[in-house]
Amino acid sequence: GEQYCWYQCTVSGGREGRDLGAYEVAKAVETLGAGEILLNCIDNDGKGDGFDLDLVSMVSDAVSIPVIASSGAGKPEHFSEVFDNTNAAAALAAGIFHREEVSIESVKTHMIDEGIATRL
Image (tube, rainbow, N blue to C red; front, top):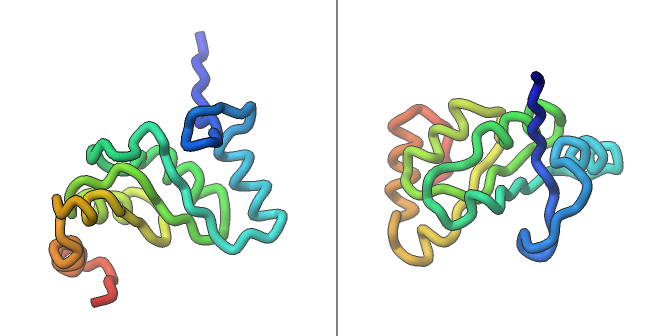
């Protein structure tokens, strides 16, 4: 049989689910005039295993406004992966920099080495 999967929207830091999908919310907020979407995958947050490329791809392909990928970066290569495999306009990380696990400079150097436009 067929199987279906959806990305549920959550609130309260992922502790409460809502009967809304990320795709539907992205389309709706674009229609309502949002200028960009900051897309956080609570399942990947803080794990350092990389961005949820399927989720970022689905949302960034569905809308014409910029999508910022968030949650999951753990090494410089995760940034090039999200740009190589999705239409994300930007990507962010916080914890890996605050905990000094990865330097901002190493991410920028990696991005430049991969030919991805990066502000210095």
